[in-house]
Length: 103
Image (cartoon, rainbow, N blue to C red; front, top):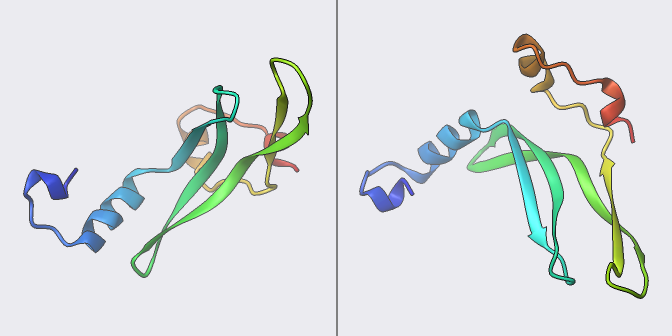
């Protein structure tokens, strides 16, 4: 969007601004059955060279496939990584138990 606006900023500068402004990315996808599921929650760690680095916090795993309208079941699983941004949440009055992040 920045590039489309006509501003002449280097791509690396745009990526640095994005990586410093976003803490968490929630990724949603359409499944084969047409339903939508959150498949990944990742923390933005910052930049490594020209690349924005991410750390998965929760991932969606397919648990079983069976017959019927809800053919596939999924399980949302923590990766065991406690995100760094929980301290920022805590400072703003939002407390999250460490149990959420245990795999």
